[in-house]
Amino acid sequence: MAMARLQAILACFPCGTEEPEHTTYPDEKVALLANYDDNPRTADEVADEVIDEIADSVVEKLLTTRLTGAHLRMHLDALVGPSGWRTTLAQHILSRLTTALRASHEELGPTISTACDTAWEAAQSIEGFVIEHPVMCTVIALGVLAIVAPWVLEALGFAELGPVEGTFASWWQSTYAGLVPKSSLFSFFQRLGMTKWHWVLV
Image (tube, rainbow, N blue to C red; front, top):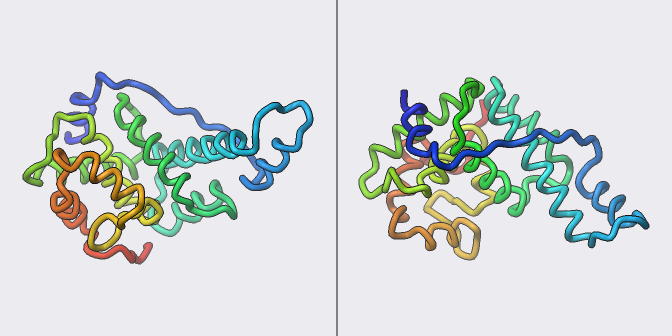
């Protein structure tokens, strides 16, 4: 199975995720904690903590869910709250999903398991990808997001014709240009069926 091969290659990077519970919306929580007299943290530190909690919750949902399409988006939107899918949150989600995929998971939900297999097979078929390099786990995570939560990629700056200049996507692509050429990344998304970046959620 493709997922088993991916886990075998990345088994030397084990880690896990936790699922924090929260009912307060992000902006409300930042205001509440920042104004608490006994809390020495700055508003920025509190904001980072809230983003971390939301990202953990989103990734935990992705790792275990059976939902897809509009039903999955509805549940993830509820976790994110009214602040929406901001770039910083998207970066945290990608980072945590990448870390989670490096770990050995015996019980992944069917949605992410299928997406991982599809992304792994697509990556293997693209000339120029360095399969054994740890960066491939990020590529697989990007592929998983392209399949199950493409709006997160949009928040990162991955556009129809490639990474948008000045975004996280362009920085990441330039950092790993020798390992993941722009043309290869674009081909990877095309092989996943992402010929456009305005998908219809089913």
